[in-house]
Amino acid sequence: MRLIRRPFRALNRFLTFFLVRHRSLTALSVLVSVALVISFSNGFWLMARLANVILVALPIAFVWSRLNVRGLEVDVERLDDRLQVGDLFEERITIKNQNFFTKLWLEVEDLSELPGHTPRRVISLGPRAKRSWRTASPCLRRGVYTVGPVRITSSDLFGLFRRSKTFGEPETVLVYPRAVELPRFWAPPAMLPGESRVRRPAYSVTPNAASVRKYQPGDGFNRIHWRSTARTGELMVKLFELDPASDVWIALDLHGGVQAGRGDDSTEEHGVRMATSIARYFLLGNRSVGFVANGELEHTIEPERGIEQYARILEALAIAKAQGDVPLSDLLNNEGRRFGRRTTVIVITPSIDETWVGSLQLLTTRGVKMAAVVMEPSTFGGQGTALLLFGALAAADIPTYLVKSSDDLASTLAAGAETAAAGGVR
Image (cartoon, rainbow, N blue to C red; front, top):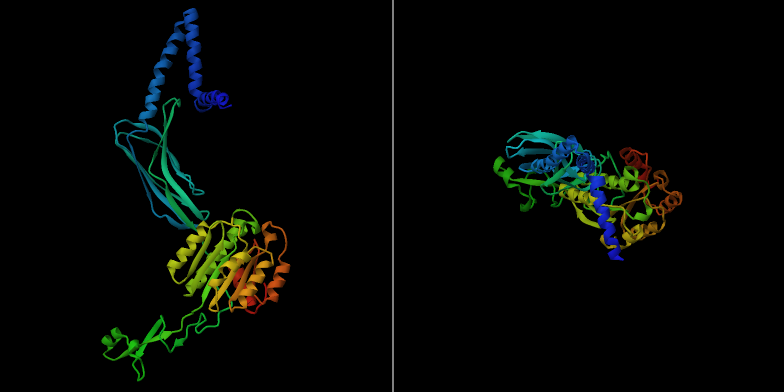
């Protein structure tokens, strides 16, 4: 059977080469053949000269196309490989002709997977000349993309032969999701000292030093601020503030079976944007934020503070895909050991399956504080309604936010804070 298929494959490659890729060359070959037949049959000299001219021009055109992509130097300067949706991806491409052969037609293209980034330009270069230009393309969608290498394609003057050559190596660009600035967002706090966004003076040493004052009898020596003491000539001690001590965990449901919608209007993208925004909100409040998701790759980031933690969460959300096969209830049961009395868990999901509500109730019995952000699947093109789910969440006394596809996330989450704080469902 294989022996039968091989001749057909060879014939298919032959026909593709001449009838698809090199139609002009095929037409000229036919013209030369016809001219030679006519010239030999009746001695018509014009046909003979035409055939000779074509036969001489073909090798010249072939060599021309090869020389046109030789002796080139390409330099690509990409300013940043970490961006957010809406930022501009900028690069500068420089092409230099290193020999004395003029390049009349060069098609320069940056081979890129980044959506909306298709820089292509046709240039000509004189001997020892160079051209440089800058491109800027907006980042339209989160994810990991490759840009480069640069491909230069050239042809002869008659367009008979095309020759391409690539320069450089592919590089990776990571596009983070962009957070929505939330004026406020409420989740039930764990009952710990300092559990508030309002700072208060502390009578014990904490990591947060707020100011200094004069030494008073009874102050510990470990509270003396030696720089202020040296500057003022008097003993000065540090004043501390209570620190919000509980951890905030964001659990994003990326189970593929419960998602709805496509592209930017999908529950996947809405969930990622909300997780990004809520993480940013609490990290700006100097809270410890952790992240867990059940997507194509399982993501678990232990709670930490600061900009580095935000970068870690952004990186996980940039590559997250809602193609997981672990239901939300299993995710909460499996990761429940990480949650304790000093933890607030915020669940973001489009699932209307009430099973995961039971998992939340089990966690609340252990002292874990819970909140839920539910996307109404019917507004994203999905099936079913969340009414029964909301009833179960209200019965469990779990504050719940309702998000629809047409909602403005900042206003919806902020407006729902007052209702959620009262223990209701919005």
